[in-house]
Figure 1 (cartoon, rainbow, N blue to C red):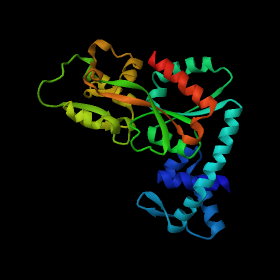
Figure 2: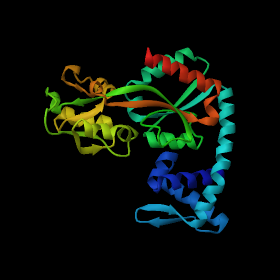
Figure 3: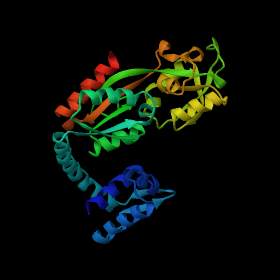
Figure 4: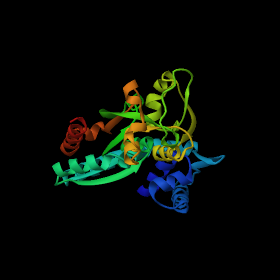
Length: 282
């Protein structure tokens, strides 16, 4: 019954059977069966289709409102037990774990040999949601914390954004007009944190993609200039001599350490934060 309720919570957040199945790592058929089991148990319709998306009915919303805090309390209990046994469940933004993250996490792990690190990688909004639900103990992600006041958040570092010129052919930043670029789409936490600064720098997004690595590869292939974090460019071994470093112009993406307030003070979490901060700022 608990896994059926968790499935309803995830579906209410994601809005589609496909996204819910991806997050839960089960088939769409299994998602449908779990929801159907709940509807049969309560003898109520809990979801309804709206176009390609799924919305909660009035009964579904009432059930979610009731079970959400209960499931969070249960997860808190297991989190405390996991922390006591030396396990740290970490959600990390895709572009971080695909670039400089593993090296820094490995150095941190060497300082915490008795702790088992369990990593999950998602987009920043998903990481934050799964921290809220208690599935992840901590998160290392990007973007502003202005909308995440329910979570404890600390900026670990600021990563410079760079322009990879189309086909890696050197260019100079135009003195007039706008520079058209390919970059990340609106859903990204990074984009939301610096979109106003992008406009001030006379940079115009003409194409948006879901992944910074995809942006970089398109730029390298010659489809246009790509704006990405410097860690992504370095991972793909783009010559730094051809990059335009926007960090010099103040355009950086914040890298944040995030946890629920109830878990932030746990010794294993506090030690993990301190070690990460030391490695990223030395």
